[in-house]
Amino acid sequence: MNLSGYINSNYILEFTENVDGSIHSIQNGLLPAALTFSASKVVSGWTVTPTFGIFYGLSSNQALAFSQVDARQVFFTASKPTSGTFTVGRNFGLFGFDAIIADFSLLGVGAGFLPQSPGLTTLGGIAYGYYYCDRLNQINYTTPDFGGFTATVGLYQGLDALLTDVSNDPSRPGIHGKLAYASDGFTASTSFINQASLTATGREVNATGFDVFAKVTAVEHLELVGYFSSGSGLEDVLLGTAILSDGGNEYSTNTFYVQGSYAFGANTLAVYYGQSSNTDLNDNNTRLSFHYRRAAFGAALFNVGFHLLGGSSDDVDKAGKTQLNAGFFLPF
Image (cartoon, rainbow, N blue to C red):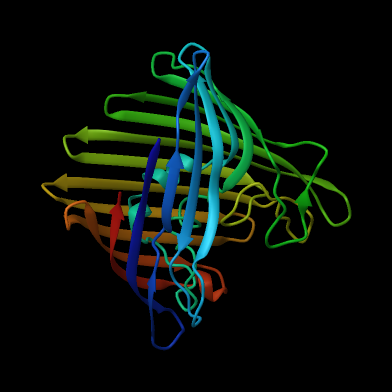
């Protein structure tokens, strides 16, 4: 049995183009607070592990407000070295997962999200270099390790669009998969996602995407990350939902980011550049981030970030911004 989690809070100062004054907030980072419970038992040679991951938003503008609670992970795995692993239940999706896990701002802030009304989480590089992998109810199978290679394929419950009236097509489930490789100092993966959706008139459209990811330790303490994805019918931030132009066609989107980090003693410096673009709308979001991290109070991490966020959309939430954050992240 295992119990783990983390707590974090960050001060965020933000300046937005064409908006007078600054916005100050105290928020969660890209990760909310979390408490994760797991247990493990061997049954007939299979290691069965249930996991419950409960995530908490600590910020609110309302007096006497309750913390937001999100059961992001409620799943189990059943694995055997010679047979592979089954994953069943609600867990993070495959498409875009490696991108968000490798983002240095995972334990910090990255791009902010509605600082004037803080909630469960900030954006990190979501919509500024990659999609959010989301929390999907899924059934997956992963092969045993073959010389560092593993492959995963699975089905997941399709999603309705958040920003339009496009809905999941119940005639078939969402499909996703991943091929990954890992060796000393190097990891790489590619994944795909596909979901059938229906417009308000009943016409079938598709949301599809694929990505490529690589992370390498070039020399001792220096880590380099590269990521690229391309999709059709995906929203700016979310996956699995078909978004259409006025002509009824699926939008084309591309994302990428590059990142380098260097650790020395208790300190780490990192730089991130990412872009998410909608080729049909000529809509581009860019993020240039500089990070500093240092161990503090023993296991806690002190994070400082400086972010230049660019946008070509008229939407204020995607306008150009300058942002500074500082805060603490404590895992346990």
